[in-house]
Image (cartoon, rainbow, N blue to C red):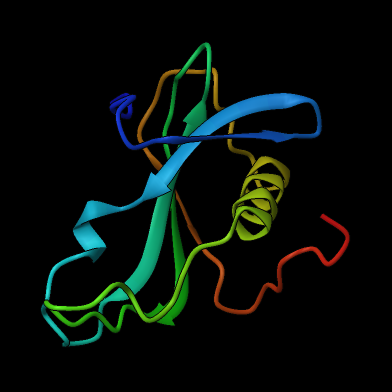
Length: 109
């Protein structure tokens, strides 16, 4: 399933362009254990979507912006990790789920 272009951000990781956005599934106001997450796909030949769970709580209040943000360097780390674990973004298939609770973003991004 391809991401909607509206609201998706572009990122280039190791010379390859991707699109990503914070997952809408994680933007509800249910405070019961949901984690902050995002989805990504190849920018020009989308195949299997990457679904990343950051492991950080999605602490949202209906009247405020999210307490935690997903930064581009974190997305780059998630994409690199998923690629190393077998995600092939241009091949069709089921969404590839990655849980990053113990992985720190690259510091040199």
